[in-house]
Length: 353
Image (tube, rainbow, N blue to C red; front, side, top):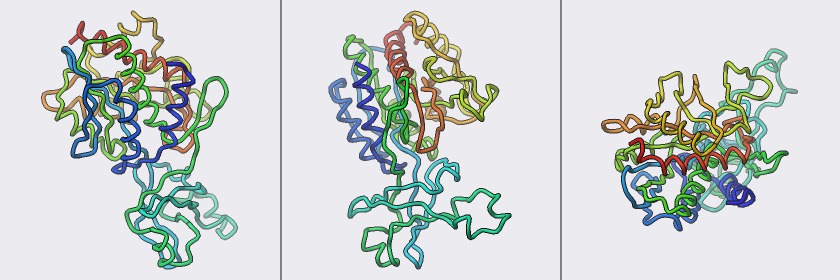
């Protein structure tokens, strides 16, 4: 696929909205893109999209989560401001002063996240970061009844109002590239497998609720019980100011990163066979990769590899700057190489499993 086409698909997914538990918009878009490359598609009770390409053994599960971190209305206060809870791992300071979209049954409306201005703070308070519980969403409502008239009730979801944009050198920025970049990597890998007529059973799974506990991955992996699994996600790129190599040795523009361990081993420890498989496949097809030994963070792989009697699993990651913010940054060349590695790994899986 041409870089321009990958770019356009990623733009659609980054600009789509779907917080944990409310991924239907993303699921519909993913289904549209996967349909030409698979034999059947279903949605399970949890909301996971499972697209199956029938073939020979071993069966390979590819998982990419559809949800993004966001917010949810807890209640509307007596002045018409929305008080919210966080869905997923926000760093509170990134929320302050953001413009947001409130997704109501009556349609989407805009809002802004506000808090006490520094002009009204005491000197000691100005030195402290503002916490999310002190913030609120202003949609311009006059009172609770006015907010309700606009469709705002407890449980409505909120996402960031950010649009996909281009930086220099094939680098792009947007919201929820964690994990819409992984979604697009999966789509491109499925297209390549179709183009190459690879005879393998592949389950391409768009999982739900990864950001709040890896929930969809647990359910779908239990149902499918594949022979092996590869998760597509993003990982922390340690090549910008404020972070040292000891925190992350992964860099943008040097290829996808294959997870050896994450969360210091408390999450995934990929088996030696899986690592041998991905490393040798990358070498065979001249795909530059990095090896990711991470102290923090987990992915769907943590849930998948502990399913039933155990499923050999690793992660093919795209290096990303500013993860869990509305301005994440990746290199499209890393994405393209990640899709190549993913597809080639499926092609070579029968040599190892």
